[in-house]
Length: 116
Image 1 (cartoon, rainbow, N blue to C red):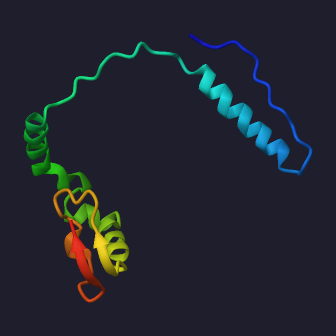
Image 2 (cartoon, rainbow, N blue to C red; image 1 turned 120 degrees about the vertical axis):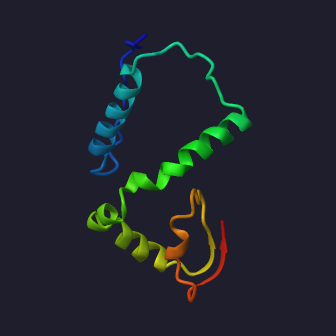
Image 3 (spheres, rainbow, N blue to C red; image 1 turned 60 degrees about the vertical axis):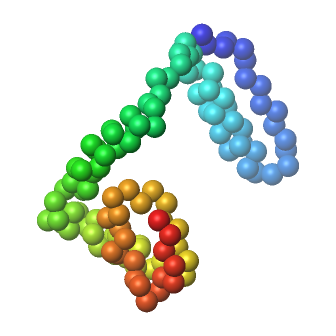
Protein backbone atom coordinates (compact mmCIF):
# COMPACT_ATOMS: atom_id res chain seq x y z
CA UNK A 1 0.00 0.00 0.00
CA UNK A 2 0.91 3.63 0.19
CA UNK A 3 3.32 4.86 2.82
CA UNK A 4 1.69 7.73 4.73
CA UNK A 5 4.82 8.73 6.66
CA UNK A 6 5.72 12.41 6.32
CA UNK A 7 8.60 13.35 4.06
CA UNK A 8 11.18 15.46 5.85
CA UNK A 9 13.73 17.35 3.80
CA UNK A 10 16.47 19.09 5.71
CA UNK A 11 17.35 22.42 4.16
CA UNK A 12 20.93 23.64 4.21
CA UNK A 13 21.46 27.35 3.74
CA UNK A 14 24.65 26.98 1.73
CA UNK A 15 23.55 28.32 -1.65
CA UNK A 16 20.58 29.41 -3.75
CA UNK A 17 20.10 25.95 -5.25
CA UNK A 18 18.77 24.56 -1.97
CA UNK A 19 15.15 25.44 -2.78
CA UNK A 20 15.35 23.72 -6.17
CA UNK A 21 17.06 20.70 -4.64
CA UNK A 22 14.40 20.46 -1.95
CA UNK A 23 11.59 20.70 -4.48
CA UNK A 24 13.20 17.97 -6.60
CA UNK A 25 13.66 15.78 -3.52
CA UNK A 26 10.07 16.20 -2.41
CA UNK A 27 8.83 15.41 -5.91
CA UNK A 28 11.09 12.37 -6.22
CA UNK A 29 10.11 10.92 -2.85
CA UNK A 30 6.43 11.71 -3.19
CA UNK A 31 6.38 9.88 -6.52
CA UNK A 32 8.17 6.90 -5.04
CA UNK A 33 5.80 6.58 -2.12
CA UNK A 34 2.63 7.24 -4.10
CA UNK A 35 3.21 4.44 -6.60
CA UNK A 36 0.93 1.49 -6.00
CA UNK A 37 2.61 -1.62 -4.74
CA UNK A 38 1.90 -4.64 -6.88
CA UNK A 39 2.24 -8.22 -5.86
CA UNK A 40 5.37 -9.36 -7.58
CA UNK A 41 4.97 -12.63 -9.39
CA UNK A 42 7.70 -14.58 -11.14
CA UNK A 43 8.09 -13.72 -14.81
CA UNK A 44 7.53 -16.36 -17.41
CA UNK A 45 10.87 -16.24 -19.19
CA UNK A 46 11.41 -17.77 -22.58
CA UNK A 47 13.93 -20.52 -23.02
CA UNK A 48 16.87 -19.65 -25.32
CA UNK A 49 15.41 -21.79 -28.10
CA UNK A 50 11.96 -20.14 -27.74
CA UNK A 51 13.58 -16.70 -27.80
CA UNK A 52 15.55 -17.63 -30.92
CA UNK A 53 12.41 -18.83 -32.72
CA UNK A 54 10.47 -15.70 -31.73
CA UNK A 55 13.35 -13.43 -32.77
CA UNK A 56 13.69 -15.11 -36.16
CA UNK A 57 9.96 -14.76 -36.74
CA UNK A 58 9.96 -11.08 -35.71
CA UNK A 59 13.21 -10.14 -37.51
CA UNK A 60 11.69 -10.80 -40.93
CA UNK A 61 9.53 -7.70 -40.56
CA UNK A 62 11.63 -5.64 -38.16
CA UNK A 63 13.05 -3.25 -40.75
CA UNK A 64 9.53 -2.42 -41.96
CA UNK A 65 8.84 -0.69 -38.62
CA UNK A 66 10.56 2.38 -40.11
CA UNK A 67 8.12 2.21 -43.02
CA UNK A 68 9.19 1.58 -46.56
CA UNK A 69 12.07 3.51 -48.16
CA UNK A 70 9.76 6.37 -49.15
CA UNK A 71 8.36 6.80 -45.64
CA UNK A 72 11.74 6.59 -43.88
CA UNK A 73 13.16 9.05 -46.41
CA UNK A 74 10.29 11.51 -45.90
CA UNK A 75 10.66 11.24 -42.12
CA UNK A 76 14.40 11.89 -42.39
CA UNK A 77 15.34 8.55 -40.84
CA UNK A 78 17.74 7.61 -43.64
CA UNK A 79 19.44 11.02 -43.54
CA UNK A 80 19.77 10.87 -39.75
CA UNK A 81 21.36 7.43 -39.96
CA UNK A 82 23.80 8.57 -42.64
CA UNK A 83 24.80 11.64 -40.59
CA UNK A 84 25.18 9.69 -37.36
CA UNK A 85 26.88 6.52 -38.54
CA UNK A 86 28.85 8.32 -41.24
CA UNK A 87 30.75 10.21 -38.51
CA UNK A 88 31.93 7.08 -36.70
CA UNK A 89 35.65 6.55 -36.96
CA UNK A 90 38.35 4.20 -35.78
CA UNK A 91 37.33 1.01 -34.03
CA UNK A 92 33.55 0.75 -33.78
CA UNK A 93 31.46 -1.70 -31.77
CA UNK A 94 27.94 -1.95 -33.18
CA UNK A 95 25.80 -2.90 -30.18
CA UNK A 96 22.38 -4.31 -30.97
CA UNK A 97 23.13 -4.80 -34.66
CA UNK A 98 19.74 -6.44 -35.18
CA UNK A 99 19.21 -7.02 -38.88
CA UNK A 100 22.27 -5.00 -39.90
CA UNK A 101 20.28 -2.14 -41.39
CA UNK A 102 22.85 0.46 -40.28
CA UNK A 103 25.98 -1.35 -41.44
CA UNK A 104 25.97 0.21 -44.92
CA UNK A 105 25.81 3.68 -43.35
CA UNK A 106 29.35 3.53 -41.89
CA UNK A 107 32.03 5.33 -43.88
CA UNK A 108 34.71 2.72 -44.73
CA UNK A 109 37.29 5.50 -45.11
CA UNK A 110 36.82 6.47 -41.45
CA UNK A 111 36.14 3.12 -39.78
CA UNK A 112 39.22 0.94 -39.35
CA UNK A 113 37.45 -1.90 -37.55
CA UNK A 114 33.73 -2.66 -37.25
CA UNK A 115 32.72 -5.31 -34.72
CA UNK A 116 29.10 -6.48 -34.71
